[in-house]
Length: 148
Image (tube, rainbow, N blue to C red; front, side):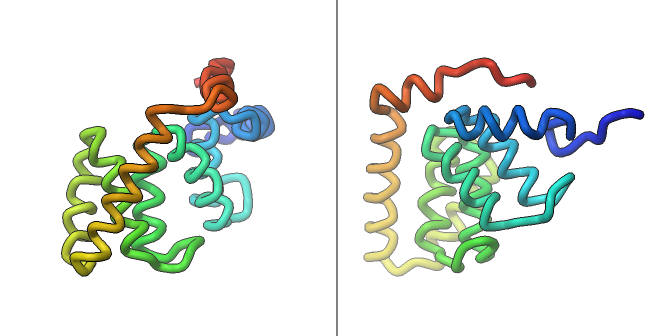
């Protein structure tokens, strides 16, 4: 029997992916977010997808940042929040992700000037934390035992 392909993880590797995600592996966290978002091999759970995307996004994963922006824009797994949608889209856009640039520009039109300034300040603080991880965060994100 051929294993079922789930997102970018074979179903037989789900537990390994989850274990690595729990240990702080950003790629595994992103993949787990995708699995829960799509409901492939597990019950679809937007809250769980947001949880894992957030863990990955906070380590600088632009795909997770983009997906969080979409989640906040649509209110999937979280209350709809255009300011947070802007923040996460902006962080992904700063890495050159074209779809995120487009979404960020849409969010600009949905925010009042004060909200936009607040969002930019928060995005800068998050980016600073990504660029300057603590020692324990460095140890977690350096784990490379993920099977791609």
